[in-house]
Image (cartoon, rainbow, N blue to C red; front, side, top):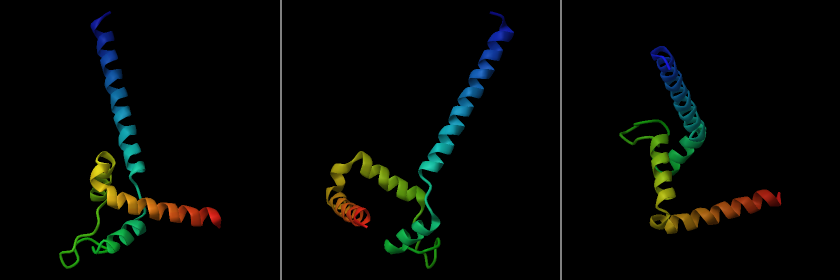
Length: 100
């Protein structure tokens, strides 16, 4: 195999990796996207501002929410009581939705 062919293969592999990385990034953004309204409601419910940094009370950021959720996912043993509450709320809402 000639040097030019090897260089072309390397370029193609690099482009393929770039494409895969782009798809991964776009997929992550889609996976972790949520409505601003839902984020604002959660922010207020947690005692934070609807918009960032009003009276030095920061708004709930998606990156913080993601960090918390991933910590719960990887360490559910640390969050047994909150998970129990979430389970009860989820079950109740699911039953009321399916009953309607």
